[in-house]
Image 1 (cartoon, rainbow, N blue to C red):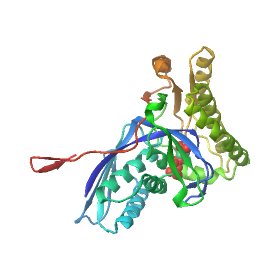
Image 2 (tube, rainbow, N blue to C red):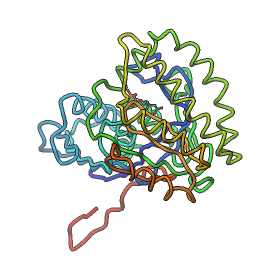
Image 3 (cartoon, rainbow, N blue to C red):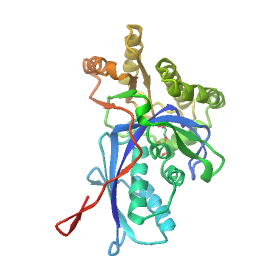
Image 4 (cartoon, rainbow, N blue to C red):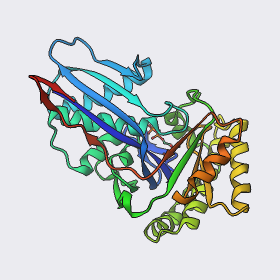
Length: 332
Ligand code: DP6
């Protein structure tokens, strides 16, 4: 009863910000994202008869109380589906910093769901897996699907799930992530979703999102980078406007975040096709095309505020690692 799975983070073009049911993570709007190839979480889940309590290791260390509670709640959901009570050992590692505006909860709960399903032999459809992952973290439902993805907000648990707009090979857009800090964010996304509804800008944002979802879908189908990038930037700014005007307000930006946003505008004015987007953190995602990745990376490297750069492309749905018998022992 052990399995290992790897899942990609995702970058939202149309953001999920605000929930109408936080317990079930039912969002207030549809969202659209790209699942990423190199920003991944790999998780091994092992259900053991002699374990007294769940053990949760993240990046080689015991998980914090809050992270542990969230993982255990997700294990409980899977135990209920499998009708077992065995405790589990969970070990998870990321290729990127946790909690700093790269969607660690998305890839984390996608990998945990995929590994849990394989370990327990759960019979769940892809849609069922997406709804299961959503209960762990909203954006994780999108990481259950490869490539370009649409999370339909739905009306209840069963119909709020993510589906594919186009596979990863449809369109090679790159997300060049400029990491300006590895620090964990001070306020969680979950708290942010709660606060979003207090912003006077929230209704205006919802109306806006409704109108751009079909445009972003069309831009993806038609590989229209200018529309995709323009909408991605406007979306990020609209979400952060809601954050700034929530009660109490939320400001995830650092001076380096602003420096990078302005740099992207300047580079675009010089003819480099690049657009920024931001999640709930200070790191800046720069969307560009394969032929200009080196140019963008070079420019980022020249800026002292950039600590690290991670280049991602379109990635697949979660993969469960094959286990093969090696001299009598099972190895991942
Ligand atoms: C800003 O999925 O992290 O990245 O459901 O509380 O786990 P929880 O929130 P989470 O929120 C993601 C917010 C975002 C935008 C997005 O990915 O759509």
